[in-house]
Length: 111
Image (cartoon, rainbow, N blue to C red; front, side):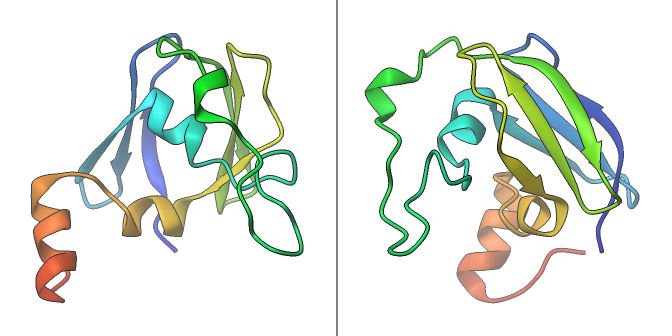
């Protein structure tokens, strides 16, 4: 299970996870907020999105970030939302950096 050694992002426009192999993943805060998979944001039975992206401010920020066990983090967002859990494995697998994105498109995982 990938585990970040550092999480930087309180009240910032992006959230950076520094992984134990020193790789850095930088996620725009709003993109993470829109990616929330909690029951308030995604319909449980169908997977249909319930969250209207137009209702999430462009300047949404993390007010608090808490670890959930050794596998995820919970973010208290400035738009009042705080029920989502962001799994570290999924975050690492969806790292938006060029190296990781290119690796996903070619089927090769980055070092």
